Image 1 (spheres, rainbow, N blue to C red):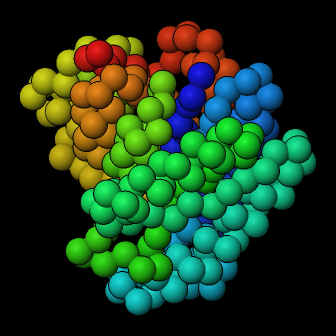
Image 2: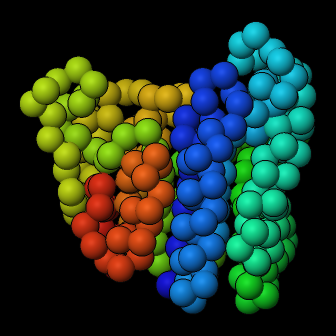
Image 3: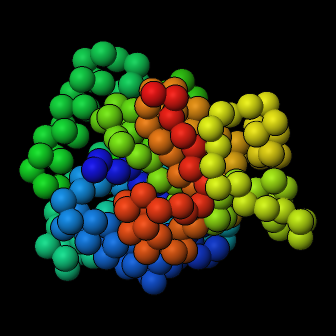
Length: 255
């Protein structure tokens, strides 16, 4: 099974920007075990800017582009260092892939990207993908890693995309505000009513970013890839997901 897993900043990092060691260790251990079982796993990881903020001892997340890109440059090194060391403990090799929207818009670059990804998976490596925040501008930015994860999943013909977030899935109402909110376990069609449940929020640190997750679901399900939203603080749920058990909210593909 070819599985793409996206992990959000709020799961791998504390609000300070420093690494959430327990969550990342559990994630790497689980993915390594899934790979050992014969699955091909691609990890789409947020967190470069957040970790750069912590590494540079900035007082808050930057708002200007140059400082964001500087934080991303520092944080990306830290992020890959952590992943390389943790996956190496379980005898797995990782590869870094940094992308912008230009890599999807140019046919040559897109084909090169797909060929590289497929070859890495054939060689048994675990590709770790992130947006190239150090060079991304308004013209070539993808904007959020939920959309990036969906685009990567489609490109590599993943069987399943799992978005690990700070929320268990899609609810009938905001579970932080309503005690009557119920988890929706299956979505077979993304209707205006389903879109309205996102509440208009984009992808923000610690919010769950449901709008971008529904956009990702639309991208995936249109071409035959199922998508699941699950709680990133419980990476062991990936075992159940790989076995086809009901976890979080599954968006069923149309093909």
